[in-house]
Every structure is written in structure tokens, then in C-alpha cells.
Amino acid sequence: MTDQTHDFPVTSEAGARLRIEELAPVARFSLRVRPANAPVLGQALGLDLPGRIGQIAEAQGRKALCLGPDEWLICAPEAARDAIVEAAREAYGTAPHSLTEISDREISYAISGPAAQELLSIACPRDLDQLAPGQAVRTVFDSAQVVLWRDGPEAFRLDVWRSFAPHVRALLDTGRAEIDAGL
Image (cartoon, rainbow, N blue to C red; front, side):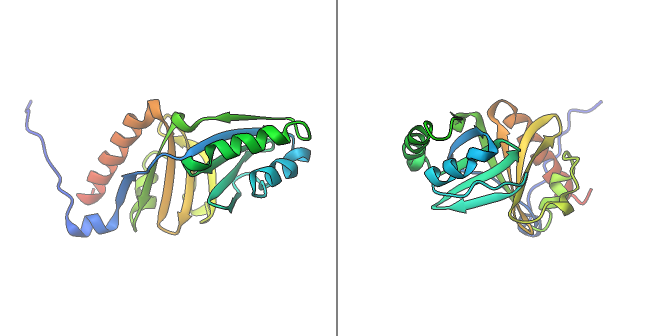
């Protein structure tokens, strides 16, 4: 038994292959509305709510991700929070819905570089080749429920519940060390 530890420093080559960073907070909302009323809510929020699971719509710095037949994740700059709440309140009489602010529930990590997909595959059971840039899905990373966004060919975003963030970050850091070490 030994108490020796190993520190795998990030080399310039490894650093260029993989980058993990915690992103700034954003306003997030869980929106539930009947599909027939989705266009009314979309108009009120200033973007079309996508109709297919995994599809993303973006306008005015706001994003809407379809997570289910009647469920969307809305993300926007924090400064837009009150305007979104007010727009949804005004639309309620025409299109009954549930809009719940979940901004403090999640932390987002950006994972980018040529080894990003390899890193995510250590704990995500999805076939990441099937997740096209501009799409996102609800999935798991190890045992944590996450929303995985593919922002580009080598760029991903992982939204993780705050309570699972230390666990997920530790897995990402361990995976990065293994990739950097060539394991």
C-alpha cells in the first residue's frame, strides 16, 4: 500500500485537445404547455417553440429546447428573466401553461476540443455521433440526469443539477486526466 499520488499536468498539446469550463449562470425555465398552445407561448416569449424532441430554436439571445411532447427548456440571459415571466403571465389566459423558474437548479459545463466527444463517452450511454450540432437531449452522465447540448462538431454543453455537479465535475476531471495521460 502506498500513499503516493500522481499529478498529471495539462500539457499544451492536451490543453489544446480538451477544454472544460463552468459557464456563467443563465435564466432557465421549465415550460409545460399543450402542443396546440405552443405557438401562442412561443410568440409571447419571442421565439418559435420547436416541435420535435431534441430540436432547439433560438431568437433574441433566448433558446428553447424541446424535451418532450409538451415540455421545453427555455434559456436566456439573466437580464431577460423578468420579461419572460411577464410575457408568460400575459399569455396565460389564451394558453394555459406552467412556467417554472429553475435557474438555480443547474450548472453548465462547456466541453470542447477534439477529445470532447471521447471525454463525454466515458459516462454517457448515448451514441454521440447521432447528436448533431444544434441539437440537445436529456440523458444521463454516470448516474446524474443531464441535458447535453451539441453546440458544434467539437463543442458540447452539459447542464447538471447543482447537487450532482461535484460528482460530474470529478468524473470529467478524471476522464480528462486519463485522456491527457493517453490511457
